[in-house]
Image (tube, rainbow, N blue to C red):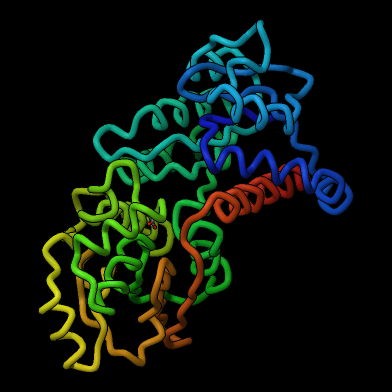
Length: 336
Ligand code: HSE
């Protein structure tokens, strides 16, 4: 399977390491032979139709901070040039999410779809701003569009709701979809101020480069958009979410929740409306997880409420979700 990888940050590198360490098993068990023919980061690219060497890519990136030094030739094509000029089966999009214009990921995805490539995205920006039209574009071009790592990282939240609960009617859901803010609120519950808890989260490397994505609820809102479209069949985008972050949460708010035998969490919910905001959750509710964990409770017509809990971020975890999507695509292609 010929693959183009957009972005070579923590997730991209984790994926390539996963390909290397599970090479034999992926072929023996699933017939999957991932051939990475092009990868690019913000400084340059590496291209080899016969397949880039996984270990070498990781070493070059570590040494030079870019994949550009992998080879002296074919190292200056931009992402768009690669996508326009090189044929592949699948594009894997891992560049950073942005919720202003969703670029460069949006152009990567639409260019690849128009060329007939299947697409896997862990970049939430394009989905948050244009989920309905991206699905239409995928259908029109008869390509598969997979994004299971966009919500819950390695925890298969989207697959659970869509596939494990298929036949059920999910009537509402609510959850903690952002690990960083959950970490901050959990620490505030132990007595830290917002500033102290934020500083600690930054030191641990949890906070996004643009802290607003976590603190103002944008990351959680983007995940809510993806869930609402994919699970509930709604046609919504970011402006449809009522979104409040955690910057204004005070120790008094946390103490008030404690008095009510509750905990204060940043909850993304889909009921009569789509809302992200701080909310008190009863202490005994399974949603009340701490640290960087994510949790989501789906309520359905006949099966009651079910809660999934798991890690919502991390390089290896997100890379494993990409592998899951890749295997799905491999299976679908094999059926044809
Ligand atoms: N900033 C996100 C979080 C990363 O804290 O959950 C995963 O999308």
